[in-house]
Image (cartoon, rainbow, N blue to C red):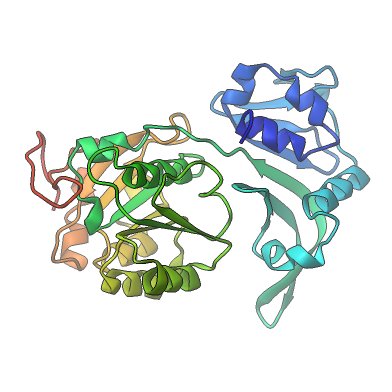
Length: 338
C-alpha cells in the first residue's frame, strides 16, 4: 500500500479524508484503528491510548473537542465502505465486517437480524471501526533465530491489536523468500482479506476470501504447499485444523488469547491437542505489535497431559529448544516446557 496503511484507510473515509491525512506521522505510525460512531466524536486508538480528531486536523485527549458524526453521515460512510451495494457485501456484513481493498477491513456494529439462531443481516448501523494494516518486516525473525521447527506447526496467540496478522505475514514472507534457508512453498488462506496485500514473496500462493475449510482444501489438493497460513482460528475450525494436520503440510495460524490464559481457554487447549502445532508463540501485546513474549514447545505426544504441563511456564518469557526451520535439533539456553 502507498504510502502507508493509515493513509490508505484514511482515503476510504471521504468525510474525514483530508483531516486524517494531515495528521502528524507519529500519530499515524502508532494508530491501531479509527473509530466512528453515530453521535460521538471520531477517535483514533493506538499505542499511546485514545485521542479524538478535531476540525483543525489535530488529535486531542478531550472528547468534547472532537468532531461528532451524525447518523446520516455514518450511513453515508457505511454505504461508501460497501461500494453502495449492501447486498454484494451481505455475507461479510453478517460476519461483522466489510473488506476494504486488498488487506484491511472495517468492523460493522449495529443490530443483528436473527432468524432460527443465525444472523441474517445487520440493521441500524451505529459505529464503524477501520483497522489499520501494518507491515513490520523482521518481526518474525526470532522464530527462525531461536530454531523453531516451523514445519511442525506454530500457533500464534495474542490479545487484540498485538500484531498476530502482521506476525503471520512476516513469517510467510521469510519462508517464501528463503530468508533463513531454502525457499519454501507457502499457501496463505486469507479469509478476511488482511493477510494479503503486502509482499508475500515469490513462492506464496494467496487464497483471498476463501472460508478456511475451503481454502485449506484447495491448498492441500491443488497447490502442494509445504506450509499453510491462516488467521484467527475459532471453535468451528477444529475439524479443519485436524484435516490440515493429516495432510502433511505444516500449519501456522493465530488465535485470540493472552499468554496467561493460553492453556486455560478451551479453544486454545483443543487446538493444541489436535497435534497440528509443536510450538506456541505468545505475542507481547498492543504496546509492541508483533513482538514475541514467549515461545513454548508443545510435547509431541499431544493431549491433556502435555497442555497441563505448561501452566507454570507462562509467567515469564521462555526460550524454546526446537530445531532449525527444517526440523533439525538445536540447543538454546533456558528451560524447555514440554
